[in-house]
Amino acid sequence: MLEGSVRKAGSRLRVTAQLVKVADGYHLWSERYDRELEDVFAIQDEIAGAIADKLRVELLETERVKLVEPQTENLEAYALYLKGRAHFHKLTPADCQLAIASYQGAINLDPDYARAYAGLARVYTMVGGAGPFHLLPPREAYPLAKAAVTKALELDDRLPEAHTTLGLVRTNHEWDWAGAERAFKRALELNPNDPDSHAWYAFHLWLMDRFDEGIACYSRAMALDPLMPFYESSIGFNQYCARRYDEALQNQKRVLEKHPDNYHALWILGMTCVALGMYPEGEAAYQKVRALIGTVPHLCVVFCELYAAWDNLEEAKRYLAELLALSKQKHVPPATVGFAYTALGDYDEAFAWLEKAYEERDPQLRHFHLPVLDPVRTDPRLQAIRRKMGLE
Image 1: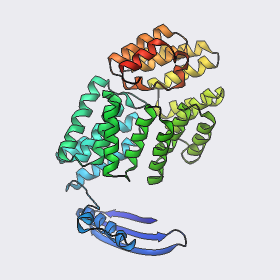
Image 2: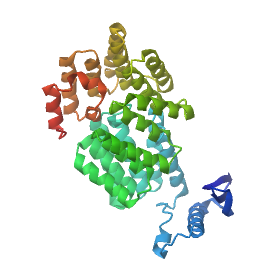
Image 3: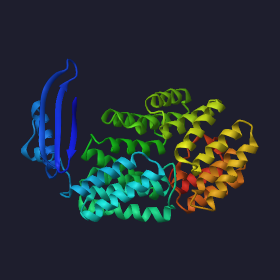
Image 4: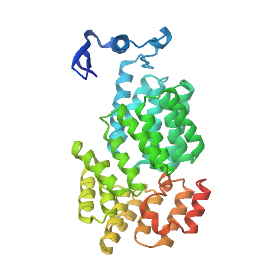
């Protein structure tokens, strides 16, 4: 296990690092680096090289050079890129806006920074309807995402993050399922140890109803980055969509023991509780989500589903009205409105919204495996939409 610390004072940087054999606590290697901040990339390279030596990893000289690839010589741009990543992985509306600002700031400082373009494209994909909240309509977000990922690949076509993001663009906006698969596999070919690539490929597999493969990919991402709760909570979402509700419930409880305020885990816990008929527990989880991130369209949908299943149609209709009111103020994915009408049993109105979602290429439309759609699973209108999207 590698452990250490970083301290910064003015332009001075102190990095301490040590390599410990976990079985017996034996220190294989330790070192302290006192440098100027401008040497940060050199320090990374030295540490990586020293660990490779201590572990007796045989590397050709050309491979040694590639241990650390900062992609920019601008420290301020690098810092903004790292901030962008940190904000993005929180996956809240406010953090995604901060991520866009950070990535764009990095690009402004270094217009040839491929990783920053890939990161920017990824955020635009999420805020354009692919994520749990929706800041921009797809017709606005998709061109921005496509332009950014295209630029990233022009600058470096061997950048794994760029191929992963291309896969997200193809899955969420282009509905090019085979092309997305190729992009994700190319990213993993270039770097099989990138947790994000495994996680977003798992996201694609989940959309394809390949739940066990998706869970395996999320598990691999967790092994590579155990501190990222999103990976583990997403395993629960796969289990929920596969109707393995007891497994999903236990999974989310484990996540929340470590991260009690993680809204993604709470959200999936709520949906799982509703599926199991544990309505008070589901309601409590959703209220916590609302307190953490405010009212977002899909949260209105799950409240509709909760109260409709709980035989409280008055409350369910109140959340539908709230969702429709939101749609007059900002972008609301039409598929989410269709899901709400499905939960209330108004299938004709639901399909009117789902057709609108198809016309607008709403990324939420590809959530065909959600249990809320079970009452219309065999409806020819649903099958027709799936055929048009290339999913039949």
